[in-house]
Length: 298
Ligand SMILES: NC(=O)c1ccc[n+]([C@@H]2O[C@H](COP(=O)([O-])OP(=O)(O)OC[C@H]3O[C@@H](n4cnc5c(N)ncnc54)[C@H](O)[C@@H]3O)[C@@H](O)[C@H]2O)c1
Image (cartoon, rainbow, N blue to C red; front, side, top):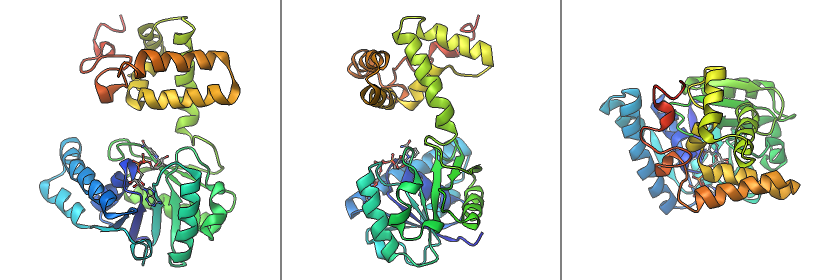
């Protein structure tokens, strides 16, 4: 793997994390966003990450400062990608924004530069032509809180060069991820292909009034030995994301069960500010949710 100079495009929730993690593992990283205001926000976000690396990973003060010093912030795209071996795109999940970005990036980036998208729901083949270099383009998908949840799903589109796929996998390992190769395009990658149907099924059991939240979670936990049930997982994902998935399905299919479920999530949870662990309450109350009680599984 010959990558040493990395550019992260989009410095929001995930972009900041990918940038800081790569710098923490010794790479020189340029952080690109549309203007200086967005970059100032990224700096604040990354300042907070320093604390999390110390708390969660036991990183030293020196190590978190050194990582920060390997970051450069830039709002001019052609300057941001000058000399880049790899550009990781983490800009909004909007087709038009991403297409325009790749059109521009393809023009200003050096010929050698590999492009990777962190998109959660859009397939790389959708943007391959816009990049102008389909063989050097693929998906590299991280999970939120990358320094703890260290999966990197690496997914080809039909035109991706195998050597590029290998190099990006090696880069993912070099920044402390577990590289998880997907040899074909798959909406939702591996994790969400498994997780979304599970979570949807649990939510439907609730809205059909088959069983309550705690009974459903208990069944899953005792039956599989998992430390959390689907509703505890949903509290981490966030009820807003869960609602968006279910509502999109309701709109696309007109399915009555999904409509009823979307309505339940909206009126009983979102409208009441119960958005999950982020607001201290979702399906459970935090801290000390009942599923963590030693007697919960009895
Ligand atoms: N949030 C998550 O948990 C998560 C997890 C995995 C993957 N993703 C994916 O990562 C991508 C970004 O998600 P996010 O949650 O970090 O979004 P975000 O809204 O937090 O950040 C997006 C950033 O992109 C910037 N931006 C907007 N237009 C731009 C452009 N044309 N060029 C450069 N930067 C631009 C914005 O200023 C902002 O800083 C999406 O594709 C999403 O699917 C998100």
